[in-house]
Length: 187
Image 1 (tube, rainbow, N blue to C red):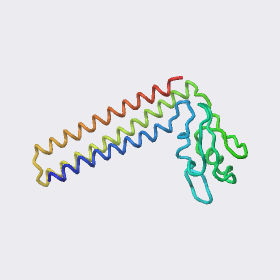
Image 2 (cartoon, rainbow, N blue to C red; image 1 turned 60 degrees about the horizontal axis):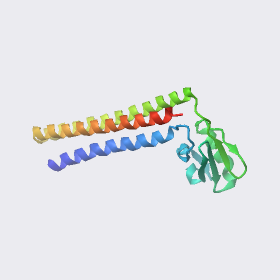
Image 3 (tube, rainbow, N blue to C red; image 1 turned 90 degrees about the horizontal axis):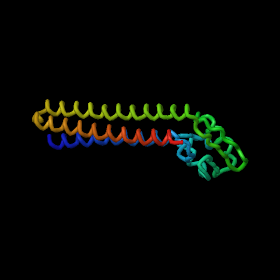
Image 4 (cartoon, helix red, strand yellow; image 1 turned 60 degrees about the vertical axis):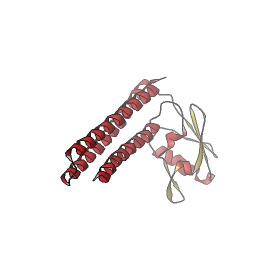
């Protein structure tokens, strides 16, 4: 029983950590006005008949805070890379310069900044839902263990520990969101 209880806590912690990893990935995609190669993460290129992440097809650099330069490993694929960027709905207008693609990252308007804050808030809220789902699953597992003979006081202690984890991770989400919001709204 004790081993199953410890395993239950570990599963809850792992689920909450996965939710936090997802939050980090999503926050990277929400740009704050500065050009970054990570803005293109998630873009898939039709590369020799296979959908391939753009970072596996090209060198991606940011020579300054307003530009992203993409240099394909194979120049014959430059049109496919350009098409993938256009189809990604990131709002970028790539400029094909023959041997490389240049993206000028437009400065954010106040309206766009507020829209990005709303998007970040939605991502943070989704993460909190994931954390609460992990808590619910953990509590359900504890209740099942109690039915199978786990003493009630140990079950209560486990549920308290799960709630503590939930509170800690929810607070981390709030802190990360506040930092992202500040980053987005800073001109």
